[in-house]
Structures are given as structure tokens and as C-alpha cells.
Image (cartoon, rainbow, N blue to C red; front, side, top):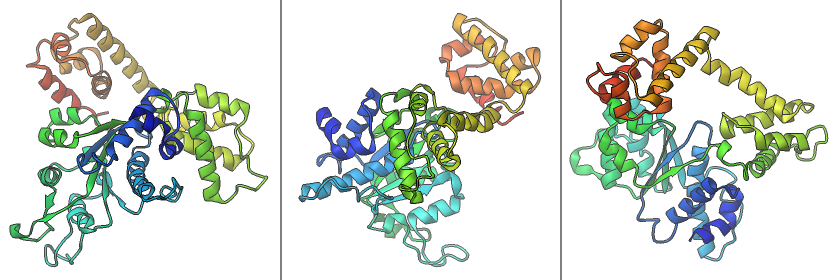
Length: 379
């Protein structure tokens, strides 16, 4: 099966590269859409850093399913399945909608369900959609999580305002995407443990660009072609339409902290300016955005470095740094350090036993995590 996935022309074109993480994802997409598993696996969870292309991958899963159906009937591989969003695919951005609107968009409404409500089918009632992406699943309000759990478990739902006797059924496959640590959200109490396990029926992790050294150049060229087709400038000589040797070398050796999103934006800038290198555009983006997000001020950067150094040393040597996280901050730093401690905990994810050694005065590792993660929004 791995050989079939590796050689499939559709997957090779739209998910290029022979890096092991990419080959694994291609194989998983092949498995998902095989004739046996298409109706067996109904919930797919996609993890990945920001900018790695989780939405793109969800669309590819759906498009590949449609493409396989066409090929089984004698059709060709074709590009028509993936020029735009597949027709059988729908997206709900959970982070960008209020709770009431998420519910009505997904389940539908009946007239009179609430003030101004009208009869509305909702995505689940639209037979066109075979795949529905619930983007940013980690941001789903806790009040809606029991309803989603039932939907993923039993494929049953009710429109807002409908009585219990009018339950409906859906055959849609659900794809759930996030860049958040859902296990940590369970510990925080903002995500249900039973929902996490239901979402994780089939898990795909999208590799960051730094783990795709062999395929990144092909991906960059593909993005170049997409940008130029969108702008209808393929034959305009005033535009720089190819990558120089310098650009190619830079693509291969740069770490791309913003992943595919940064790569695409850098290429757009390169085409727009016409007389600058890809490295100038990518590094310019990094200095404008990433450094400002990570280091709001020079003093904050220094605090983060000091906090990380102390905590890394304590974790490595399994020794105490203070009786509690609060005592660590109060003894060594100002309140500004709280956010740095929370960032260190999220980034390093130390074992519970290590945390308990580092902060022996705290009740247990869960109480340490709960206390520290509340500091994330503090300055």
C-alpha cells in the first residue's frame, strides 16, 4: 500500500516530496480514501504548527476521494478536482464565529428558535458536503462540546429549535484541525477528554517545512505557478517568474519558521518587487512579524532567556528552583516573568515527576500546570 501511495500521480503532484514525514502523510491520505476505509474512518484529526497547510491538507483529502471515484469510473487523474475548493467540501472556522453562529451554521435552525431565526438547513443537512472541516477545533466553546461529541459518536443531530423526536442523521466525514495541544487543554479544563479521544480516531500530523528538505523546492515552484496563474501574469516579462540559484539555495537551507504561509508570502513579495531576492523577502517578513511577536521588548526577551535558562537547568539536573512557580517568579523576577514561565512550560512539556521535583511545595504536577498556564496572558 505504501508503494501505491508513493506512486499515486494525484498525491505526488499536490503533496510533493520524498521526505519521510511527507511520505507518511501521503500514505495516510491513501489509507483514508481506500474503498474499504472511506466508510470506516469518519473522524480525522489534523495537527500541525501554524502555517503548515492544515486546511490545504483537509481539502486534498476530500479532493483525492472524489478523484478516486472518477478514476474508478474510467476518468483520468485530472486537475479539475483541485483547482479550487472541492465542491463536496465545507469549512467552519470555529475560532472566527460566536458560539450561537457555530451551532446554527452547523446544525441549522427552525423558524422561531430564537429572535430573528429562520428555517435554515445548515451544513449537516446539505447532501452536497461529504467532508466537513471544523477548523481550529481547540477553540470550540465548552458548551458546544457535548453536542459535537454526540455528532461524532452517533452521526446524529438536531436543528436549533427542533424537538428531541426530530433527530437527523449525517453521513458526512468530519476533519478537525488544530495547532493547539489538546491534551494540555484537557488538563486546563477547556476541552473534554472524551471529545479528544473521539476526534483522534485517525490522526495526521502535518510536518513543518524544516522537516521537508527534499520536497520544499518543488513546493516553492508549485506555489510560484499558482501565484502567477492567479495574477494572470505567466507571460509578462516584467515579472520575475523563476527562482535564481541563490533563491534555490536559500529555500533549501532556511528554517521557514512561518512554514508554508511564510514561503507563499515571501514569493508574493518577490514577484511584486521584481528586483529583490527571496531571502530578502523571507527575512524581512521574519524581522517584521515573528520577532515582534516573540519579543515585544528587549527587556521581555532578556527575561524569557533568563527564565528558560534557569528552568532548563533545573529540569535537566532534576533539582528544585523554588517551592512553587509563584515563589520562583517573586524571588527571581518581576511579574513580567510569569508569561515566560508559561511559555517555557508549553514549549518544553516536562514530565510530571520533573515538575514536582522543580517545585516541591506545590500539590502536584497538575496544580503546577494549572497555575502557570493561567499566566499566559499576563504581561
